[in-house]
Length: 480
Image (cartoon, rainbow, N blue to C red):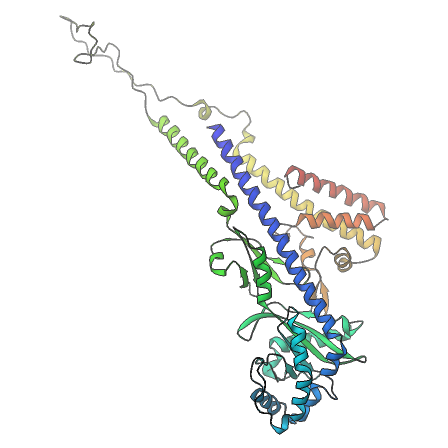
């Protein structure tokens, strides 16, 4: 029985270790793939937005902005004429009215070049927005073409929100070219996509904003490269819904969903899903066979305890066909009723009857000790982070924002007009520490501070001691 229980225990450990290892590898792979996609989008948009070609195309004197103003003094009427003349998609205009003569000339000058440039990028559409918030050009001529983003009904649209954020960051930026805003997946014209906005600068003057649209299909392609048997991936929107997945979303509904992660580079949220049975492979069937064998053994053992042992009464002599041939029944002897004897109680297993030598080593005691050990590990994580931040502040005269940015280990968020370190802040209190803390980032943060800070020695010694305790916890828990 003990051997069977031990085998079952170690088999469960082996299955869990194999599944966890594959999930960790999948998390690293999807983070690397999506980060490469975001970096590619950043570099392509930066190279495109910094060209004089874009600056001239939206210029207020002879670009789309100027041509849009010549259509009509009323922006609503100008937008209506544009949408009536240029159909959705990339089809050419059938007939150009006289009011659009100047606009059509600018459109013919730039449209084909824009189409060819985007063909080699991760984007499928671009919008040119003048400095007043009017969408004066769209490659695909979707519903946003000609819209006035300053109007009440367009102000809170995806493009309207992005335009305001780009223009709002300009006063705080050292150079306008450094401003770049990338959105979460958004519903855009019957599908989902991401928007990337940059200011258009010509001769040091901001002429407007260029917005690139990345279709969610580009993310779908990247996720499909990573999908494997038992492992799936999904990109989430702001509400936590899957907008891109591999494999398809319907089979993933029954899979185990790991914790959501946030991409450091772009802020996108994604999740890894797993089918434990497929990941375990042959170990899964061995585990269930051992479990069934254990249940059967326990059932037989309990049944043997419940069955009483039958003892024959004293003086009983069997008669009849079952009696031994060399034994005859007694003759001319008084019949004395046999003494009633009670059957001895069923045997009691010493494994159950004996009291343990050390009551504190019972299962309940071991469970409580494990909880205390886990609480000590979590508190040790918080101690290391708080001591590292205190040492950093005293040695460098800098705060946690600089620590997150210079170490590259923690994401810095823009919350309205101020920078925040939401993830790092959770590691400064035991109450806010995540359920599955990223202990590697804590260790790397402490090591980074120790490498880059000198005086004072007291804080350095305290951090080194706390880091040693944390590593001891990790070794005991076989985490490293």
